[in-house]
Image (cartoon, rainbow, N blue to C red; front, side, top):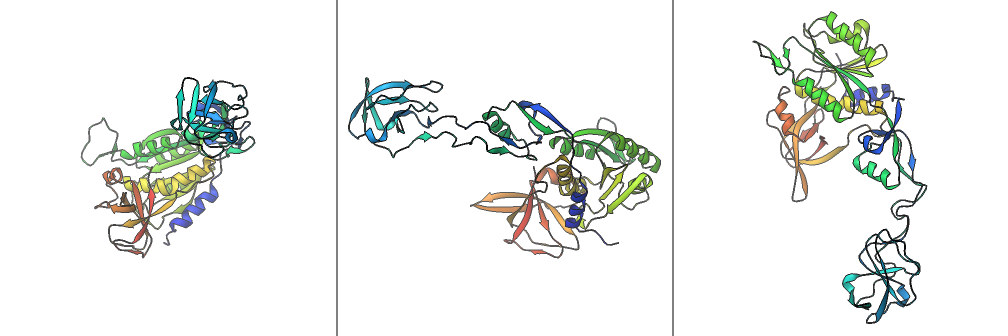
Length: 396
């Protein structure tokens, strides 16, 4: 069987992703982590007036002479509305305070000697120094947040700065998850011979919640086709996307692929990657299905490479694929027949980005993912030696 390349698999997935049309309006403090559903332009200039960038003295540049004393005609604090500057005088002004009419320059307080109501200028600044001009941050009418952008804390603060109280967002996708395997047990229960605790449940749940998704946990499904079909059918009625872990390989107890084909279709199966080769993509009652491998590392890597960009596309993000960066390898590696994703840790040393790999790259070692802050990418047949550039994906 010819394996699908990673790039082709991602391209196929993204071509089938249909962005959600569900939207709603939220208060700013509730919109954090959402996806903006509108282009937002500012109705005001920010700042709305010329103001001082420093504590000092406002004056007319042409009237300022070093060594001359000036009457201090006003005291302007932030929030105060000043009158016009008295000709031939200076106004005491503080950071953020509006510039009085007739002033075009602020002398910082360190360059002025104040004695009573007289200010002696020791240094004349350039004209327009220490002034924040009206609209120098945001111009009225300019788009500051675009449709499809992630609403980070900075984006929310930016909306607050233009006086927005609410923002229209894409409603979170509903994602059903389940794990397969008679050997799986939830924490809190004793382990019998041959059983293991189900870490993938928490892995998938956590990764999805970090993306702001609404998660329906359908639990552990026994290794039976009939039970798998039942859960898949239930999930297709309740959610926008179905994700499973385990049961997508070719073993006699792997029933997910056949269960999906019984009530839907498999569009892609097996990708040329390591770890994570047995990845399945299909549809059940027009709802997309992604079947991830059961080994924890394979589940994690498959999620990063396929599920995350697919969900972002469905959620309506403008940018869906993770950016790749370059680092200097501290190890030798020779790529095989599949693209490899190595658990790695990047660090900065003497201005250079170096990347180390975890010693044991076994796909069952969840501790290696905990250690890693990146995935080092080795393409088929690629030879990397110590000191060579290597591609990395930085993990959230």
